[in-house]
Amino acid sequence: MKLSIIIVNYNVKYFLEQCLCSVRAAIAGMEAEVLVVDNHSADGSVEYLRPRFPEVTFIENKDNPGFAKANNQAIRISSGEYVLLLNPDTVIGEESVRSLCFFMDEHPEAGGIGVKMLDGHGVFLAESKRSFPSPWVSFCKIFGLSKLFPSSRLFARYSLPYLNKEKQHKVEVLAGAFMFLRRKALDKVGLLDESFFMYGEDIDLSYRIVQGGYVNYYIPERILHYKGESTKQGDIKYVKAFYGAMLIFYRKYYPHSGWLMSMLIR
Image (cartoon, rainbow, N blue to C red):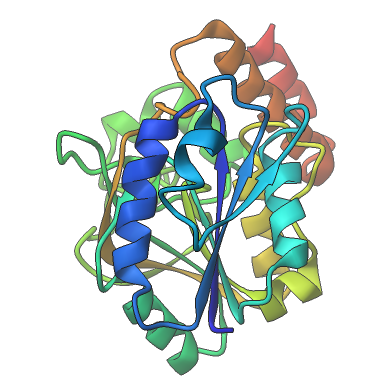
């Protein structure tokens, strides 16, 4: 099996339907499998989608164990040489996964790939290419230095605006909405850290992939990401979940700087 595509769903059946239609077209003729993990949706997602996509393996959870744990469920039973973790509120191009498989074949040092994500209005999403949120990088982001000096390699490392978004680059962080991963890298560094319920698990895994000796790449292959539809990011509980995830990351990798994130959460 060349590719396993894994999608975690929670109450966004119509977005997931669009996503699966794009995936079906993208993997036509490929050795690929698609697994959808439903985290106890209340909108009848599985009942609606299973007859429309009989080729997809649906895993129905009896509760919502979180994004990381749900992805790990599917990764463990998947068999692809490469694994794509994909958000349900995305639409991918017909040639996207083929070109990324070819890139991985030609670059054995690549542990993961992120792509050029556009929102529903065609606007580039800055999280498509990022650096690790070290204390300095986070300080510059939080206090606006990265916006004041977007061309500075010192102050604007969070979302790397000085890197041409139309060209290939080595980057540190892959976005969880689209993480194209080498299974051998996952076997070496481990799966998603289930301490993260929502947010942060992509940064954590990206960090471990790099620590494991692999390189993460940004490739300007375009996809649509209707950002936030699967998480409703404006809700205060999701804001708290994000900062809580960052606190876990800081305590894990920057234990002497955890006070910075703790102060901001308060």
